[in-house]
Image (tube, rainbow, N blue to C red; front, side, top):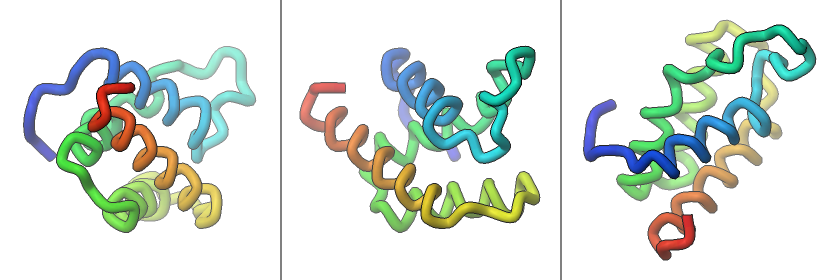
Length: 98
């Protein structure tokens, strides 16, 4: 996914959210787990936010990551809740709050 430049504040916020709120692998249960585990997904999530993606679009991407790319069994409800959080961040960014 390519698009406009990603503001650093947005990148940092999304990175933190993915690592601490979504964390589909469960890395936060391990003190020595690398903090960059999900960094390759941050730009795509940011681009979804910047393009004003719907919750369904964000969910489809996250669910694909979780199920197909990572090969995890998936936690649909948790991923749906996180997709809603991503949309909230998008609204904050559009309103100049993020």
